[in-house]
Image 1 (cartoon, rainbow, N blue to C red):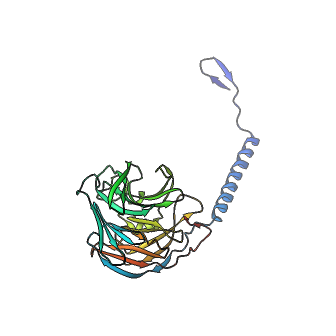
Image 2 (image 1 turned 90 degrees about the horizontal axis):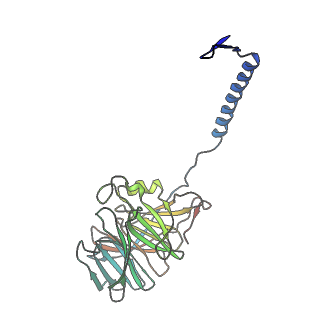
Image 3 (image 1 turned 90 degrees about the vertical axis):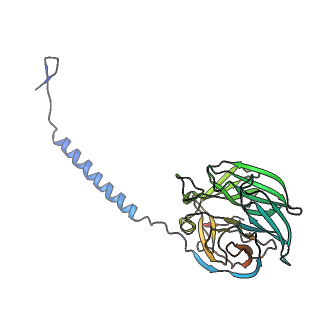
Length: 312
């Protein structure tokens, strides 16, 4: 008998009987069996292994001495365009002679043109306010015939980071955004936050991917300075300074690009352009020597074609 507080009454308290003890024993036994089976099932699920990364080597074809070759190069069928922050210089491919030039004031409204794309009769350039923060970006548009600035599309401040390159993708755009560990970066996002983003024709975001760790490690502490979809449909990326071209694919599932191949090239990173004659030739720069080179890129195939999807 047990007294119930404040009532003056007594209440019978019964101790657990043998049936209760047996139920607890069975529950404990089933819990142990469940844990063992769960651990066994987990042990049978294999860990993900990324596809093998092919290692290839490119071959240099031609070289031009170009004083404006500091940030990158674009190209059409007859000309290439050297990029140097606030300067664009147009050169004849056949002769290497300069055929036009645009120049803006240093640290002006156009501060850091990083790469350009010739398409639809326009020379479009990725511009940012690097090395300032907060990061702001714009697309600056030029007439390649007259080398006049004709339009501007401001992207403003984006969480994605600083615009470094873009290319045509479906009916819109695919673009690279950079974060940096040091100068030009922000303390709460390092180079690992660099990414590839897709937009519609009006620059409204439609999707995007993370860069694979194997590429980020090689680009650190910077990001991709150049990027373009190749004639084979893979996406090619150049970092800030390493002589390596990274080939990546769309994943069949998930948010991270797949590293297909690394190609050794005679280029110190920066922005590049595919030749517009349909060949496997790229225009690259050597910023230390102020050179523009054309380089033949070897054919690339994916180790796991089912998981590695092309962009075109």
